[in-house]
Image (tube, rainbow, N blue to C red; front, top):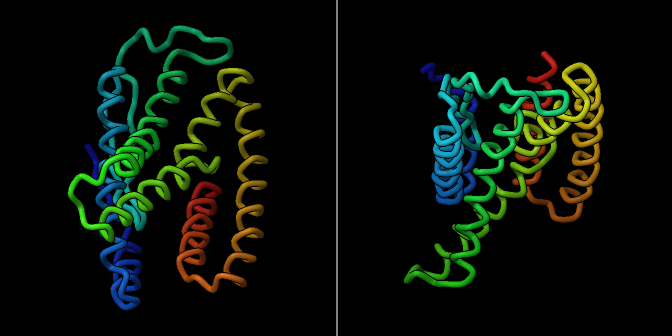
Length: 202
């Protein structure tokens, strides 16, 4: 399996350290790692093989490929593997949602500050990853659904339009949030989304 570290993670590490928010960043990275482990577990159960893992500024990305011949069975205009990709992609956000739900219901003996930090980190990771922008989980789910119903070529065109609408809508809303909230975290997240968006256009 191939491994890759995005060196921009050093910039974000330094930024959060200098702004006194390193604890927040470390909690996010920990649960982003567990988020990715959830993808891996479900992927292994469904017959996928890990090919590569990348450590990125706000989490991890794992490439999984089907290894069984029955994944080639047709489902509408795609194959069984696309349906399995949807379950794999949803595993991460569902894990974060479960963690948040458990912390909302039980205190688990944690200090309020740490409990709240873990709760909101998981809510943020869940919502962030469900954004319909590839390679985020929401983008992966959207792409697989489109492939199943429209086939590869048409799905690519629709996904391209959907990604453009998503990134520009988020930029518009995020700009207003930055203006009124004056929160550097919004700017950081927007910047990271643009990095992902432009990377996929290369």
